[in-house]
Each structure stands twice: as structure tokens, then as C-alpha cells.
Length: 153
Image (cartoon, rainbow, N blue to C red; front, side, top):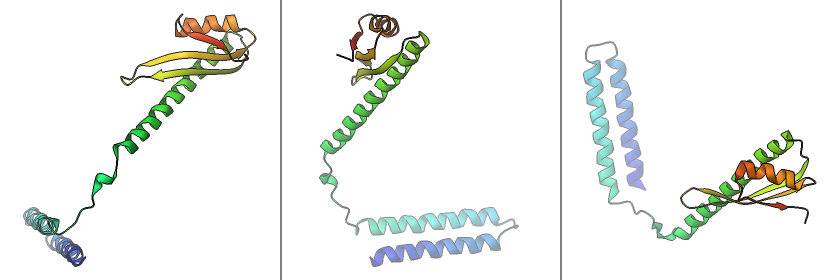
């Protein structure tokens, strides 16, 4: 702990010295040379402290962090992206159906996002009285192979 306090003290004293020299040489021809010299001194002090303290500091063991935790967060992220993508597609389909005059009670799009980033739409679940007309509009937007299912059943 004492090494750290002495390191902080040395950096503070060097920084204070730099400020004093900067104010003394302000407006003189020596300003740029003095600025260069005290930057070198500052770098030398910081580098000396780093190399001196580096061997004395014990870094914590980071092996306690498993890759399983990282993959869990990646899975959560992928699920959130798939859910948001499905919601965005549902919103676009809802606006298309509303523009066509079809009243929709509920619409949900199930999507899969593969590891290469491609999106596949598994199915669209829709609650409406005009299922066939809505299915035609959905298939014209997403492709004829899109499965459109009645959400009421």
C-alpha cells in the first residue's frame, strides 16, 4: 500500500512541477522546449513507477470467470434480438394489414436468427376474422412458403 501512495505522491509532485514551470515559461521563447522537457520528465516518472510497482502488485486470478457465463449472456442477447426482430416484423405486417382494411386483434411473428446472422421467419400467428385475405398479404410480403396460423384456435 505504501508503494501506491508514494507513486501517487510522485505523480502529483511532478504534475505540480509541470504546472509551475508552465506558468514561469508562459509567453517566452523557452515555452516549447520547457514543455517538451517536463513531458519527458513526467513520462519517465510514470514509467519508472509502473516498472517498479509492476513486480510488487499481485493481480487477482481471473480463471474464476467461466465461458459459460459469457455464453449465457450471448444467448440472452440472441434471444432478445430475435424477440425484437419478431416484434418489428409484426408491427410492419400490422400496418400493411391495417392499410388493406383488415382488422387484426393480435399478430405475433416467430423468427430464428442463425449464427451467420440470417433471419428465418418460422410462422406468423394472427387473430383476425379475415384470415385468408390477411394470409395472402403476409405471404406476398414475406414469401409464399411463410406459415400463417390462426391465433384463435
